[in-house]
Length: 486
Ligand code: GLN
Image (tube, rainbow, N blue to C red; front, side):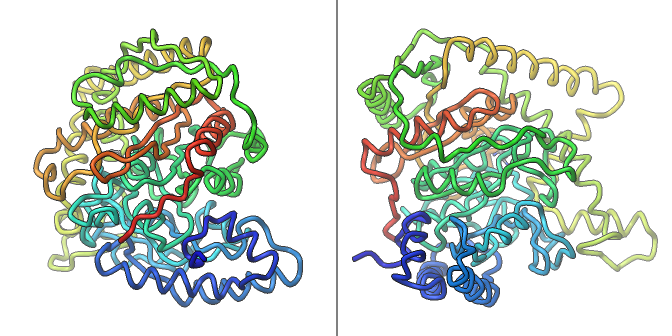
């Protein structure tokens, strides 16, 4: 018999509906698990036990009243970049370490309306800048598969928590890979939606033309259910897609025979670990057995420029977005001087970590007069070429399948002092992010005791097709819900 914290969200929903257990019982089981693994894992910046129990009681009332949804009573972790009314939201930074938001993000409003239970705010690289969750002002998170290793980042807390059973599902955010890369390294499923699918209202901004909130879950169905809940138009975000959300759950369980899958050669060269490549090749064979048409002749030569493009555009936007942390309006304030510019300078010097400062400097440089055309504008032009290349590819293919990351989870501290080595982690997740396309990562086996991630990239607005393929693959290969044995 499974413990309650071991259930997927859809399994838990069944049990709650048939009154096999209550939401309070489920929440207590998850909180107990959370408290037992958290000392080793550090996946949470704030644990919200009291809120969780209040929400769990409310959820039980909804089951009694017949107003429950698919997510009512489900214990969730929320990345601490997402603003939660009345609950401290830090962005993993010293500068917001005491910030208690007076309003709610759109996505948290949606979860509250659905009746979910928030167990805590999850750890992340400061302002979502990083690939290992080591750049957090609240200490690094450990990978529950091997605590000497990183869980990926920046949504490392969310991925680790889902994988260890400290919550049943979570929200992350993806700018250049921050949902998919940690999902891959922790053996869970993560989906970066189409840009504009999920409102950014109340999501602390990093790179506004790239940021998207998305779900992390134990299986494909859970990820579909969470995206179904948080997605859709929101007039408070001017980049929110006005088109109605497709019914994502409708795609689950559909056959995939005849789907045309392109496998771009550029994702299998330099730097990929042989084991990772092997697992992905095995997954491709599985898709072939399911009746998909696999084409390996696809070449996407613009892929190699995505890293440079991203590391100009994202820091440029970040340098502008982070100008608001000045010690005046909110957050930390250094009070050692009564001269305003000194206050601003000292607050920022003290409040921001190394990586954030590096990004602000890079971005400010790229945007400065004389360099704007050479760097920022050029990067935007190349971005258009990347988009065009994907557009062409999707005339021929339904989906693209690649590895999510070149390697499995690496040891802590290995890359922390080598920014370029750290940036290379996202080499396979950056191109679709730069193009605003939806992409999912799911487990496709184990290499040397650690999970390997498979990435499925879809055309603009086609999360449904991605979920259809991911679900079919998951069903033939054991059904998901890999739990780390921490
Ligand atoms: N690792 C990438 C970076 O450091 C992507 C981060 C993200 O997607 N938020 O910027």
